[in-house]
Amino acid sequence: MKRREFLGKSAAVALPALISGYAVKALNENSPLVRALMGGATDTDHVLVIVQLSGGNDGLNMVIPISTYNLYNAARTNIAIPENSILKLNGYANSGLHPSMTGLQTMYNESRLKIVQAVGYPQPNFSHFRATDIWMTSSNSNQEVYTGWAGRYLNYEYPNFPTGYPNTATPDPLAIQIGSTASLTTQGPTVNMAMSITSATSFYQLINGTNDPVPGTKAGKELNFIRTIAKQTQQYSSTISAAAARVTQQNPYPANNSLADQLKIVARLIKGGLQTRVYMVSFGGFDTHSLQTTTTDTTIGNHANLLGRVSAAIKAFQDDLKFLEIEDRVVGMTFSEFGRRVKSNSSVGTDHGSAAPLFVFGKPVDGGVLGDNPTIQPVATVNDNVPMQYDFRSIYSTILEKWFCLPKATVQALFPPNVNGQLQDLPLIKGNTCKVAAPPPSPSGSTLITNYPNPFTNKTTIEFNTDGGHTLIQIMDTAGRLLVNLLETEFPTASRQTVVFDGSHLPTGVYYARLQNGTKQQVRPMMKVR
Image (tube, rainbow, N blue to C red):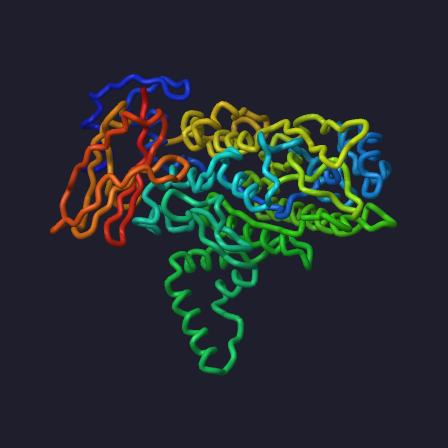
């Protein structure tokens, strides 16, 4: 039975419920809840570009407090930026930017940059790996979540991925990561929703059909063969090459800047017509425990070089978007896994800290500064941290609602349940950026697994297709944890089967029913209500 037919035949079942403060009726196709459970491509051509600053960026030397400069200077006697070197912001006297960030200063003064002060989360973790996981999954610090926040969003929009993809309606990658392997940010319930391009060099080899030279040995011939097979099996290489070929001229980018190289590719692919919604790029080196500045001039050194490259790359990217006439469609944001301590250390550096400022940039952004300068004690100690003002999950949720145009109830369903109460609506995006969404189309690919009723109170019947052979039905929670193998058996032939799931012992919230049958798999979101 097709999804629309199933909903039509089930429309008579009216189950009033209050979910996240929203009154809904089960199986009403236009309700935000059912859209969250069934998925559907939102009517938007908006693009998000995520810039990861790996290593833990020192926010106090990036966005420098002017109104409390004496306290800042006393806490950082060996690395503080001189007050007369701070870049001023039009109409805002309390803070300024590092002197190397002239590009972002210009963007701020053009109302294309939002500075969000002191972004973090309760009970911060100071491990690079764990803190990065928290930012990528949007979990609390005491939770283990195995899906990424952008991966859950893309799974909502394209719920059957990778079954049936690419297709005529969705021929392009859902997300693209440049600069490393696909990250946890885009991890969906079963697979990563992003295509990974390991470097700018790999991109140009892809579109030009070239590879790095290999030695004329047996091992070299084998390597060349492996590369050829990998290229042949890359589902999206042809669409990426075609998009890149449509763009023959771009605005200049700075040389010897790996972040600029990545962003140049992103602009080219967006202009080339890819429907890709999320791009992620990365730039490292921000773990500045020592020699963050030079000892003779604090305005130069390692951190200044990093911030200068970030600023120049983002400014060039924004100028290119304007040149390509696509700047209305693109919003970007930066993040780093944590900030640094208030007090500098004796090695002319800073140690792992907590909250730090975050940038949201682009023409659709509601420019300005959000928040106050961080609190600095009169006598700062080595243990003092910047206290959080804004939860980073509120940045994500605002982007999902105000930029990707999702209903609030849908947005809340994409976060772990005990995070929802911490989400704020923040003034990041200008008004009237969202189109009126059309009714969601049927998901691409075959619908292999459904359940009814949905939402359910205690029990729900899971209906699924099997091609025969080994068939597995698993139930998982939003943290990605396996709760039970509900069914695991061998079916002699292809058939349509049902199995009842008793969730009466579980708390209310979203759960996933996962079907695995041979090479096929599919995940079905289910909502339990009171």
